[in-house]
Length: 341
Image (tube, rainbow, N blue to C red; front, top):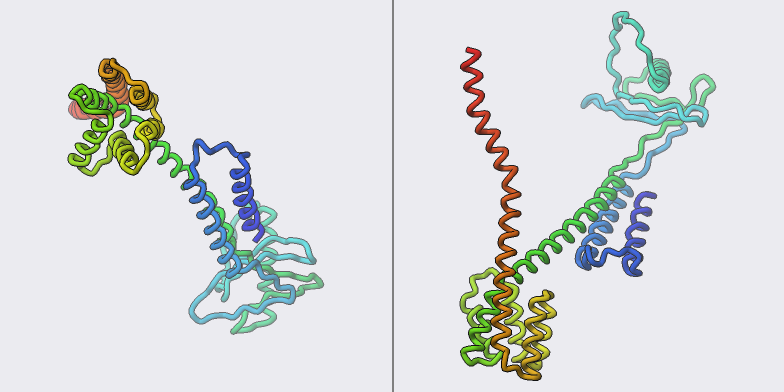
């Protein structure tokens, strides 16, 4: 039972340490992953405690033990043995015992200390049960030739094992969840960067056509809703959210500021700053600045595409090497076979 207490202490100690900020994992593990860890570890430990309480610890028999012989067949039980209070090892008891055949003489092999002790205990049990000569029961003596025996059944450790496995599984699930969250953030960041040039270019064309910033935002969000195929595009989702905020009463400048913060990319924050400055101070060169920004974004996207292409080529090296080995095997094996035949 002590292992369950230790695990509970570890769980609550970790929770307190996280709450106090002593474990600096806020940037790696989010709140949802932490809750998943605590719930899984606590639930597994409670289940392990229930299993341990149901199976109980090892039973100690200091007054001997009588084992009933069953007609269905033999069964084997293992006991820890203490002689005069000192541990004497363990022994497996088979009820009923197999009929012993007289073995042929073989050269004696060196026995370990534990094996010698178990052999002595077996001889004592055999002599004791021969004296009892019972057809229905098998006896474990409480005393033999002035020595007191104590028999103990090994404790069932399945509950402790279950708790330990649940704690380890909770750690794995937490790290897996944190890794998935990190991968989603990376994918979102890459998608935002890839969509930025087309978004700024479309916005620039709409502004140059005579639309206001707000109307251009509404036009982009409307086109996105009409052509939405099910897979979300984060940049356009944020524009849609900004339009909804403006319709609900949020000021236009505040909606643009929130849009830049939600995207959490320098490019989008710069774009939002341009919109806010034009809204507050006005700028005759707004169209030129947006056009310059869109051209720079396209150049950045081209560089990003080249980097991704080089990364993909690197990942293909291993499959290509494996295919080369297969081709070489297909060519060389028939050649060797024809040479030897």
